[in-house]
Image (cartoon, rainbow, N blue to C red; front, top):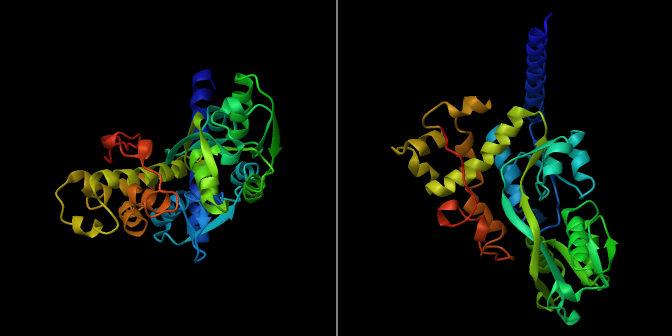
Length: 339
């Protein structure tokens, strides 16, 4: 066999392996009859139990949207709590089908760990929260501070970079379990808590006896674009997860909600007709039926609905949309065309 034929044979073999891997996750989920999602489990806005014992948050809604698309029922989900250290091994070993533990997308994670990221579902940055009584007004006031941080997290790297940049010393209090880390900070064991601004707001709303006793310093550091993660090489599964997120974004831009989706059955808008499966064809491209996006919108809602429940006026966090708004309103959310 000459070199060209060997190259072609190798390429075909790799393609076949990728297709087999892609089919395996979809087939496994269908055969099991449920989608297993790795979540944080203790961060309001992303994944937390409400007062009635129901999982809520934008990471939860992402999982439910995938279940609605693939299994026809958003409730066919199982949620597994994972930590900053256990979340990637859980995905790699197949313990979970998709990771939605507010994971920050970075170059190394995307290229070196054997994973693929779906679209960004929340844009954030690292913030610094301190007790008001500490009297700090800037990170430059934190020399010698004790800092609560999770091992293996983006926050751990940001703390090292920021303190090195200002020539300051700090003592890290490294705690793996999120609830224990929060309790350590709010009980006074640490001077500073460093996480994403949304995560800090979440912790303050849940654990602080008086949220007004804790303030954010004005500086933010780094970028924290977060979204769902799947195993690398699972091409069809990655496509499904990717377009599930895009469907929620596209639905909001088109003005299609869980409440009005059925009123579009006679629409002449061709983009909406393709999105809702009224014009057939897109489902087959993903290995799904044509009503996959309709079910997402009907059962879970569009992105704006998910954001409102998780972070907006309906939530305890009440965070403005900001950069997590649609591109048509000055935000960063943008879906490619559905054609």
